[in-house]
Image (cartoon, rainbow, N blue to C red; front, side, top):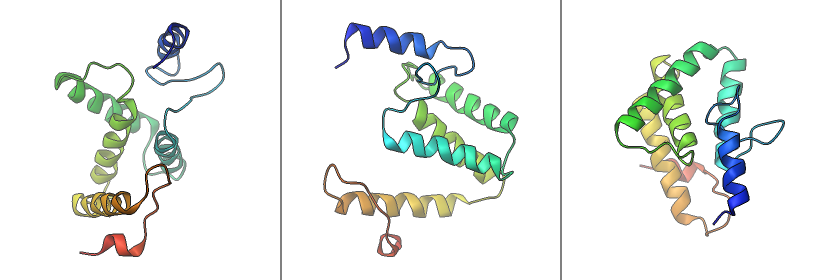
Length: 132
């Protein structure tokens, strides 16, 4: 549970120009969970390597957020990185960098790895997680 002060800070953070909807402190984005930082970094690295432009990324993320809001997402900020990840998957598929089949295989592998990982420990994929 957050304090009133934390809620006020979060509300202010969500309104900062340059990082709309992105939690941050005075100087940079912050993340609620480690996977959010990893998803953020993945987008930055894929852009840096020329996989897509920032305009393409912004359009993909905006489209995903619109779909989620149309589907009833109240846009409280707690689902932002889920939209980020869904937008990334859609964008890399549209660019031919992966396929729906390959993404589904990774989802299944991740589920297998999560199932065998004790609570509180980092989930690590192994070749066995990709078994059929």
